[in-house]
Length: 357
Image 1: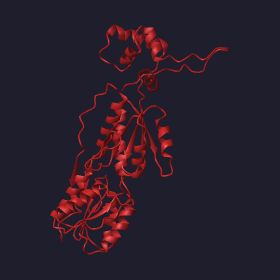
Image 2 (image 1 turned 45 degrees about the vertical axis):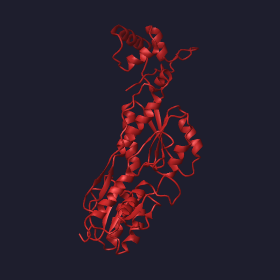
Image 3 (image 1 turned 90 degrees about the horizontal axis):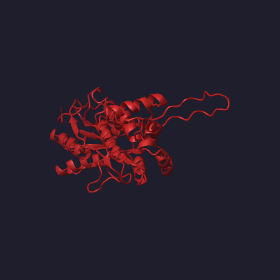
Image 4 (image 1 turned 180 degrees about the horizontal axis):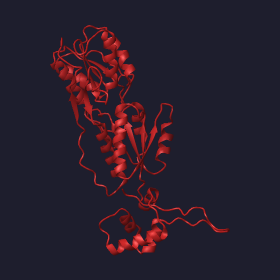
């Protein structure tokens, strides 16, 4: 971990004495007769330091009572080792798992991570300005309209990276970003259901981060593309108003009343959970009467009854990759790893089967 800093000698002093000023990295450098960059290299156990020089620096550290501290590293090196994450949610699986990946990567690199949860009532410009005031970088989890709007408002001179929905073809996010090809994943999941013999596939949508309320996100676009490639007119999609199981249950109740519905793709696993419950209450078996496929492969997906077929997303990997993009802006000597598009996998479990299964 790259850390440096200062020590406090406390407030104990004699009458009329001022508190002793904390030793800085530059004080150590002066005492050892080296540059502060050399002190930083010693503190970070860099191999390219002569043994005699290392011994002088360590002796100066001991004499001055210098203590390693991340804040002083920022002052000495110009790198503020803190990141603030802007997100509208920390509980839904995709957001929480992405945040976990960010936290893992930040911790491994010696950065502290703060989280600012955005709300519809926020003044976004003021919130962003406050988050960036400390001089560190900003990370945006931009899976919804509110956080996507925040991403667009981040000033150009503020280091920033994001995890976003797959952008529309031919367009790129406003700042460095990573995403998974959930458009193609949804197409493949829909094609799988058609291959099982279903005449069509209905879709329960998550809210999208782009466009108007009637705009389709990448998962909906992938679903539609698979149907059109098969020569099938897509039915009207359901949902798009919420992410949770209750939203899925409400849409599932409508779908369960239609005997022509035999296959449903859901925009996430929480929606699928609600759909499964609505189908059960309506007396329709899964997968005997209706096949259901979710999205994300949340931890509960394999433990519901029936176990949920779903698309597995590597949200933690997205978080780690996005942090690397931000670190590349904060550290001039940081070598960015080769970028790869995060993969997805279709996980087949008990909730999907052939028509009449």
